[in-house]
Image (cartoon, rainbow, N blue to C red; front, top):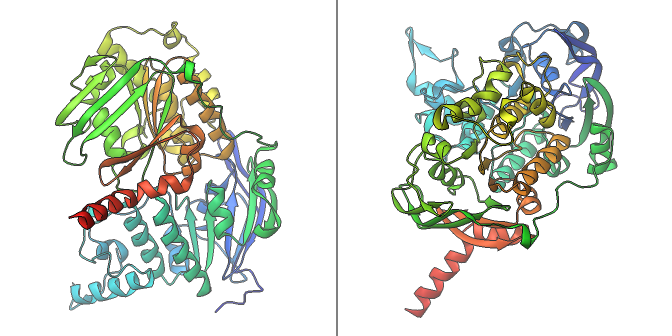
Length: 515
């Protein structure tokens, strides 16, 4: 085991420039074995750039990296992996059509007589899955596309362990996980550091940062701000260092009763192959939050309303009229917007410029409706630059291809795309996923401004404080059903009782007892 008193990995005076941007400016940090070191900062602070330098995806312009006390120069991530430094990106690097075993040992498959030794491959895969506690959960022969997000993450961690990694970098590892899955990941991280591994943890979720991290480093605008033991700082202090000011209010005020208007969306007994007996009402001027564990049907509800996987039975009414939203095109025609959870696959055109991505919903509406209204906003020549400023997209140019933006900035582009539209019904599925705390507050305010202008908002989030802080009402999903509705200000405990099906299980037990 490495000496816990000496850093296993160290960066000294690292500088990295891109055209028009200094991504890192003279940054230094030390990472120790058996410790979790969180790196926090706003989107664009330089966190991901620093991590990509550590694993050889980027080469620094200045400075040096020391690994186990020796200077290193990685020119490719594979070199870093083989040396013992692995990274798990927020967007997984797995091949969906390949099996778990093929992904974990890709390019390193055991052979016998010149052929892949399938028996040994499965055995090695089971061994490494056992290290992450997933040997009974994940089959070596399962195709990755059949796994949940949480299971795919375990495969990524297993892959890192198969390289005998000494340093594991986790970039937003909890962004797509439900609460109980975060607990599983937390236990695994503690197990890894007990074995002497150094874990570098990037997250915008401060609850998890303070639960998991031993040490916290703050970056701002590509510069080092401070490093401190997690026990010696508070979330408020870290936020102040990140944004340069105190955030007194995380969430805007809730809607007053007189601000709630007509029914914009009503579902009566809506069902499809994933959803059952959905009864939902959404009014103008309100935000209805949707909570639930991963797989509970939250995203399926959004997709049913938007026509991606429509209801096959029941009644859907939009603005008082019976509606048959059987496709996204029909939803757009009904002036409904959908900020998708999976920005990479469904929300952006990565090879297209930022300005084209933002205007795509406007152009779609022009095609569907033949005209654009909302005080002429969509026809203003400076619409894109105004929206980019409004949602604080960090970019050197409006013609920058979206694939080169950080994950958080890509999410802001998706949000800006729909803010540019004339929609009056909005569905936000994880609208602040991967976005820093300052930008979250700005986006929360923008969502509330939409309702103040008369829009109806359905907001799905796996962050319970966000659901509680933003929602005028909360519906909770469980097993493809709405298990209950709660008023504004409901507790996390109240939500989790419904999200885990506890109330339904009690009711079933009562019926069985009566019988």
